[in-house]
Image (cartoon, rainbow, N blue to C red; front, side, top):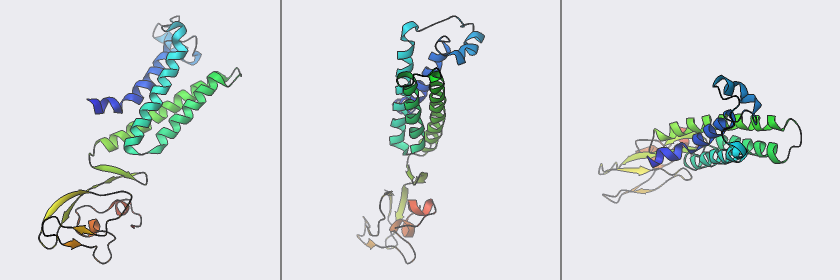
Length: 204
């Protein structure tokens, strides 16, 4: 339950800011048509709190995407979200132009795109409990090493920042080394190759 809530913080923020805009057609004329279609054309649900609630939702969306980034390490949704947030707050506080509202609209749709991208990455990462990100791609980190001497098997989590050239069998204490042509013990004795090989790049 907690895991699902954390994964949905950004969606809560993005949905909230669009909902705020729809229920505040006077502040967001672009959404006036949608509000009118819902019979809300003259409704200002949040009154003088509209702008504050809207900005809070923007921050919630960015924070949610940042939390997800720390898990899946895919940077682009976070980059788009931060850029969109800067555009929105620039429209509020820096731009003196009559077109500042368009900056806010651009930022809103940027956050929408970032949320979709973040959802996609969460979906990929969430379906695999033992996966990680290597060079922007999802890789399997769990590999079962089988000792060629005694046949002992053990599940290990492969690192993404180093290659393991030596591995001691927990059962017979044999020190395993990569076979000729392999870059690490996982490529030689593991059920899953190391992350660089999985993504098709050179190993260590």
